[in-house]
Image (cartoon, rainbow, N blue to C red; front, side, top):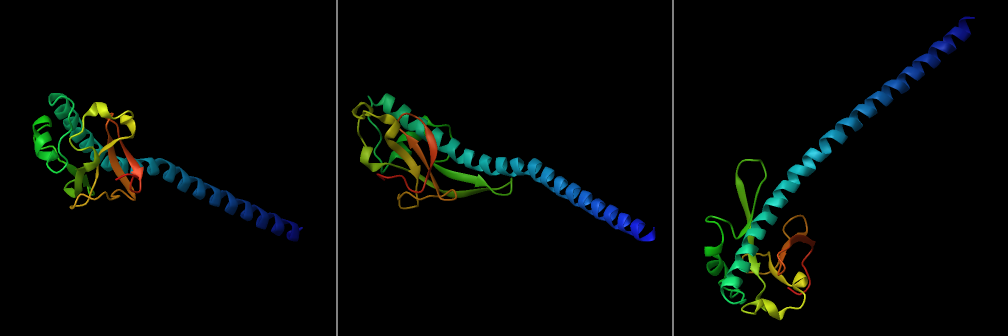
Length: 168
């Protein structure tokens, strides 16, 4: 009888270990399931802030074109030409907050020189025409957000594109 009781005790202890291990794993998975969207949302809010800044600059370009009979601004001086059409202090570049307090400048936006001074009506597919994009200090396109480049299209949409978009 003592041998059977000893086997039962060992079996019972093994089952308890498995249950404890399952509870620990379940608790860890539940914690990850709760916390992962919080961290993903925080990163997304920084990216959304840069897209929001680009959208504001793109709306300024569109308003400039409306007041100038459809002509887009000159790409070399577009920021000065568009600044009266955007809210004061609006950035013509990307800022983000890494720690939730101080904003860090990540780089400027540039205007596509291929469409400079053209009329908006000249483009058959405005959803494919890139007006603004993330750039380095010399105006060359640069992927800035984990390998993604923010671009603003002539139809008013702004989105992130992987790598450097073709045609820039």
